[in-house]
Length: 311
Image (cartoon, rainbow, N blue to C red):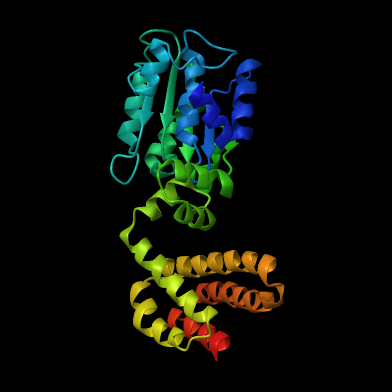
């Protein structure tokens, strides 16, 4: 039951919602799992599917040990079909092949389950083809669509699905999960404050640019904290060269805000009289993010922060 406990911790509301649906026999023929990358959509889709095929349910939950559970985990069960984008999109031929497959009876039972990953990548033709199928679904059939972008799913498809919203992971849960993947505590804490998506956090952590940018922001913060005039030169010689695009620059401001908040929390306990300095710096950083969104140049914003704090 280790997998069950893990999923319940990651998405307690969704977990209970799906479990109640199964226990009370209120299963929909189509579900739409909506939420950020890394919030557990794929894992919960498989876990929910196992309810229908498990040979030895334990307290109405999958045993995770029987032949069917193991084959679903390893993506080898003939009556559980998964579809992923072919290149940049899910093509109409993939949906047509699915329709042909589902007109046949299940290989081992009457039931069939289809899981479509990244459903927002269906092109117009494939989405319309799926819509026709959802209008007259076969018996003993369930489809689970997963998406990170609900707005890209046709409204007519959304209306035929039970939508399940996956919440972003809490900072504490995300940090614990990252630490479990051997990411150092300080880095895990920073990542958990930059995003609530596990997948995005892991992606950032593996980017070589991230470590360089983090070290650059820490050094800039150290200069600002000490009112060191080197902060101004550092913006020109290091930050501008390291942070090349708007996304990287915005992330850098978010990192700086994180380090300011961390130091402010320490100051509250150790030297409350110095609190005003960090509050002012935090206000400047938050304002900087707004300016960047308004297309003010990153270098100008960073230099303005430095001038106001140091000089």
